[in-house]
Image 1 (cartoon, protein in one colour):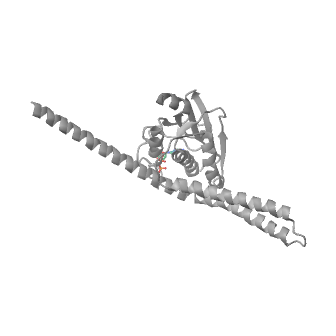
Image 2 (cartoon, protein in one colour; image 1 turned 90 degrees about the vertical axis):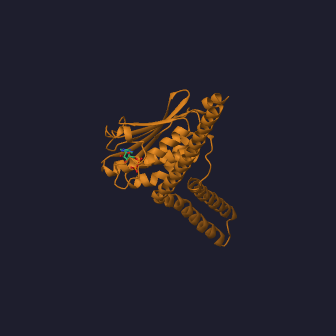
Image 3 (cartoon, protein in one colour; image 1 turned 180 degrees about the vertical axis):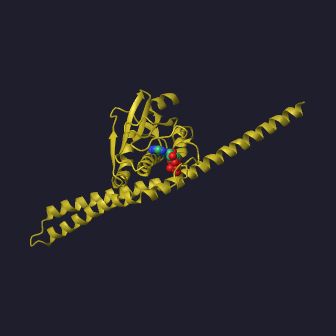
Length: 272
Ligand code: ADP
């Protein structure tokens, strides 16, 4: 009898260990996918990235030339040279920040959990996306909630979610050839413990038979789609104790995707 019980306990433990290994393998595979998706997203954003870097480089060049002109005068104007040099340094720092930002998105590293402002993250994501959106004739609105508390999150992962949802909206509007392309990213507080972010577009909206499948892996209606973007978004948001959903309630008549995250203060009081 004891032997039977010991055998059962042993096989039960073996099942538990096997399940833990399988879960770890799944988490690793998901992290690999999320990383691969981020790299391919950066690929899609090369026009934006190039544009972002061109601005500080152009400013460096203009200020450098101005500095030389002030130096080449019969009486060099040192005060002006100092000022233009300061501009050069500030713009060089801006270019370095952009590169750091791209590198942070491209490298694979352990997720971190720090208090971040969702509106700040949206603004950072839009910095990347704006040139791409403007090139496609999309008018973007960002509606802030200044009183919104921070959320505890991995900056890069959360940015991946925002950029992914915005790129999806952009692609949907482009594919449907929507004459008026509009997108609003907003934050709100459904209650004191939750911050919500919504992305609304003026695309074709969502078909009711697709609703239940949007966040499933490999669900896609796009010709070259992979159907991984929304599945990755969901796994990131759920890992942050939030939830993500979609409906046709967009103020612009198309699709609306939204996710919620617990506010930092709630996280702190929960862990106490
Ligand atoms: P993919 O973009 O590779 O198709 P996603 O997981 O990002 O993969 O999206 C899955 C599907 O969800 C898309 O193929 C599309 O049918 C639908 N979808 C996503 N975002 C939108 C949107 N903003 N408007 C309409 N349909 C959308």
